[in-house]
Length: 301
Image (cartoon, rainbow, N blue to C red; front, side):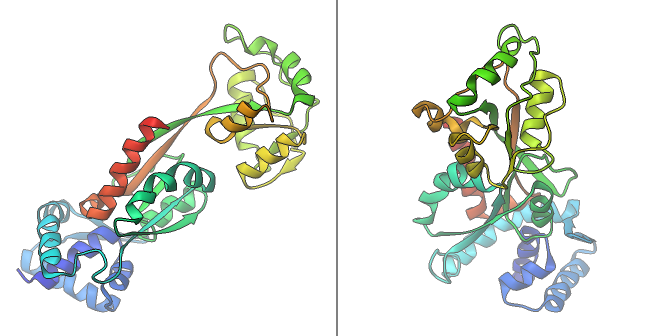
């Protein structure tokens, strides 16, 4: 079997897209398409199913990738083209929510940069991020939404606890209204006269908290809408109103007394982060190392 065709096949399998594989290989898209078709003719069966968002490997494609990719990587390393620094560092395209990437994911991956990994980071909504992963624009994504279908593979990474916080000036009003929620799990009265700080007009954080803790619709509209959880925390610290935030984000502010957690519920709402890749792409060494490092780091978050 022609190693050039095999290398192109592995690149397409990892990229999930003929277009991105062509960019990575320095070839034209027609050249990549032609090489894949040539390999498929040799094998007598298709290796990929073409779709609007890229390509999905067939059963034969998955089997060939798992068997061939490690050996191909070893040959390229032996030839000097697989060593970090031989043709620049390996690049990992990562996408997810800005706050969680900044405070958890990127610090965990930082040691890999010294080992030859280059990171390119994108922020976006879950639907945009997963669409970009399927299309080959990203290699690894962190989302609160679990991807559907066989093209993407997800690993539950970490559960974040949502916390209602407010500056001391609002603590009495929030605490009195929510007193029933803190004991046996019985829903208390939702605070109505306190301004709300949120990241979107749809109140995604407050809405979930209100539904699970108070069994009620959230107050609307928000007094402050800012598309950054860190900015929402800063507004809450300065007394702009209450905010519902991930505990990892506001834990230090709570410790310093900049905000308080009035009437904590018996069971706080939980959201799960998912670490996703394209199916079969963990045969790529740099991606596998990053994936493993994040899964291990999350145990201590």
